[in-house]
Length: 129
View (cartoon, rainbow, N blue to C red):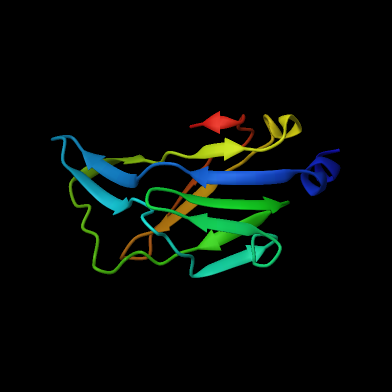
């Protein structure tokens, strides 16, 4: 059932706000604000020409059917998040009503020493998170 649902739906994932980390003293380290963001690589159904990619001044949107993923190296200049304790990621998810509860955005970050941090929200509803 899920495979059929995934293959029939058009999914829209819109990253609607900044991706950043924050510390206890209120200082924040911006990782990206998605200002005219470009990908280094798009995979499976997110790859062009089977998708629509829109990059704007404060958002990045991919419209595609089925699973896809995106790779972006954003480590230059060096992002120094020393002393930060929290990570804030905001995404907007859209699609047909049948997609509600079946969306699963995943963000993986690899820091300078190679440590991989994976953030996944399976079973999300349509809307902003």
